[in-house]
Image (tube, rainbow, N blue to C red; front, side, top):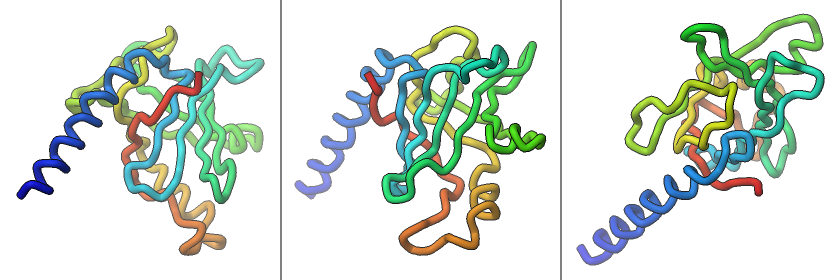
Length: 160
């Protein structure tokens, strides 16, 4: 029982500390980790150079595998969804994009505006990325090179 209380206290401390850190970190400097613990990172960065359409860039990488995907992040007009567009596919004349949903620490929807700098929300989920990754990399998948899966992304740290 004492051990469970210690674990609960530790988790509540981590949960309480992380949102405060996220509030001080702009989305364009944030790093998220995969909640599945496979070692993937989602790193947001400066806008894609030469593009007025993409407001922020994003990279998914894994330490053992390096960079897997590079995206431009944009938002449609009106009540437009926030999306990540695979830049390699775009250069090849194809448009493969994924809706990204951001959530606050209480799992309410986070700010939907990316045209201006916003604090990094606690969680992110990218629709359909798991199946895209599986079919894109299935020939090379292994225990040492796992698929992304349909993971929740959790704010981890600020780059600066």
